[in-house]
Image 1 (tube, rainbow, N blue to C red):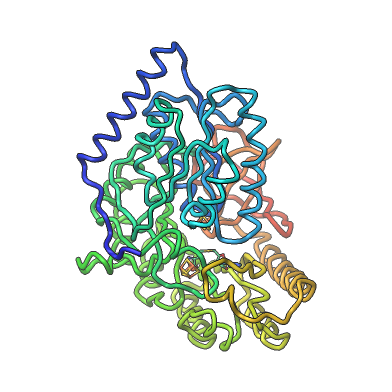
Image 2: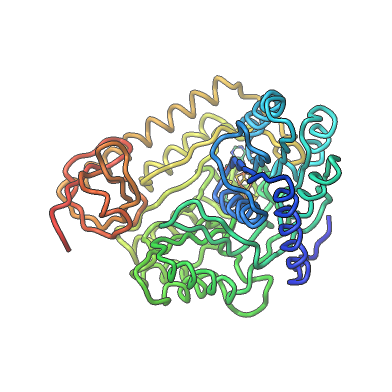
Length: 470
Ligand code: SAH
Ligand code: SF4
Ligand code: F3S
């Protein structure tokens, strides 16, 4: 693998904009307004990438549609994190044979993390001939050129060469939500947790320049966005590669100082280098949500070591303690893996104990899924699928009880929410901590920050009451 970040020059991006122009002419000559369907699998990084794919398509003259039926181009932005995610993609790609038959000229592209694995792109090349184009995340900025080539030649394109990764500023973005925006601050990951495919498919860590991030945030706030989530696989490493002396806490503080009514979130932070400074910064700025997603993965020190996580449970707990000492109401969420190769029943119990100790507000539980090419995929694993399912169910039960208890404690309190939409006869909104609150009200409240009194709850959401103007 190459180790150098490629910064895509403005000239190269200008060429891509010209290709968009050629695509517009291609369709205009045929008297057609083309339609594009973009489907996203996986995490917010992929959501953010899809918004750039849509942006390029809009610039190339496509209208966006929410169904593959009748679309002139289909783009599936894929995820490789677990086997299940990949199987879904293969299943859906297979089914597109029929969709394509019903719409001659339809072009199908696959991109995203799965396409960063040579075995996957080879499988697509040989077994899915109806797929017209494949590109990995490093090649996202070249999409207009790839699409034009497919339209003009009818030949398949594969842009999957291995690379440390690229940084491209100025790709057009078509955002799907008018209130909440994702802003990637860095790409890739250097951590190589032994189970994880991300460093292999997204390349080495590379940070955007602080002024580029700030400019994008200023524009979003000026355009009326009310919530910005700064994204990176490991935001605590932000800036290390730039050598400017600006770390993630500095960057977040600078965003929080932009005038305007908005709130700020971030994802994700690795406990290995989550600094006190970061907690202090969150505590200091009212605009930064008092929520921290701090994945612990396992409560057992031997398992953590084999996972290559570089912290132990005591260090993790002391971080949590520090966070809560500076923000007593800090909302904590986390990821955990059950059934890591060789995890014994006793080791699993350490995970349960850690959950009981921390009492997370929400927990994302995953059953270990072996990923080809990662060290953990080769580790011996004497435990059965049934053992792992049982552990998974146990965690769910423990967490559901904690979530419900935490929800119940909200009853009678007044919380600040951002109203983000409607579901049936109720408005939906989110607290600072990301909790879903439903309440009655009219659509004019959508997009506003309000104080809502909590009157009831379920395991998944809070029920509130809004009484009047403020
Ligand atoms: N960069 C983030 C995680 C991104 S992946 C971080 O380090 O916090 C999101 C979650 O998927 C991880 O936290 C982990 O819990 C889970 N995950 C990653 N690889 C997995 C695998 N091979 N099997 C099961 N779960 C996995
Ligand atoms: Fe994967 Fe670990 Fe990087 Fe997160 S920090 S993306 S779990 S390698
Ligand atoms: Fe999946 Fe890639 Fe995200 S593997 S979880 S889409 S970084």
